[in-house]
Image (tube, rainbow, N blue to C red):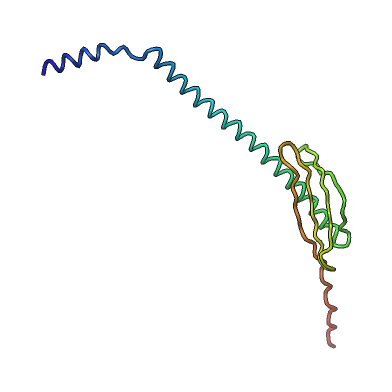
Amino acid sequence: MRDDATRLKSRLQDESGFGLVETLIALTILVIGLVAVSGLSLASADQARIAKWRSEQAAAAQIVLEDVQGDGFSAAASGTDTVSIAGHEYTVAITVSDISSRVKQVAVVVAGVGDVGARSYTARLYKPKPLPDPVPASP
């Protein structure tokens, strides 16, 4: 029993801790992990920027579609417009096509910005039906 204890004690005394090679390997693994995390952070920031631009494009299209709808069925016309959202100018192409005598389709194409290409949005305008003539009240 004493031999086992002596052997264990001498073994523990021979261990001198980490050497230079082990320390360099640990640092290399740590650096690789930090580079991977920083790469993910950069990719995440890039995706957030693209999402912001897409949201601004959708907001520009929404503004134009609301303007066209506010002008009314008969005033809807094709053309181009420039919309400013959060300090960015977006060029918007509006195409109005007749589907029937009571329905028009409005296609809005918002020009691309940065890494985001042009985006297309559509809506339909409906001509309101005339109200029936009121029935006169009987005396």
